[in-house]
Length: 127
Image (tube, rainbow, N blue to C red; front, side, top):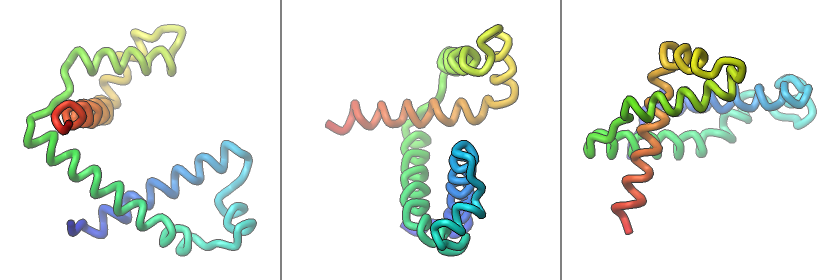
């Protein structure tokens, strides 16, 4: 499967941001990590390329299946997920936080649900 280099690059960017966030949580900067490991940003990006390509391919396959099978996120699933997240991010008023999340993160939440529904579809239909 041929995939656009821009998609791979974007996934590598996300992987680098994730690494940087995990390092910050541990009290290190990305620069410190690079210094300790003797790596460069270019080497890290090249190291991540194969995994990024694999992830992009998997995402494209899941997206194609979800479109072909018309797999969607229901309003009920969206609200349930928003409430779950509301309990995590706004434990004092999870319903209010859920409403905020539905307004601000609806597309991301729906995308996650569609992926889960697609994986469930594959599991149930590919035995």
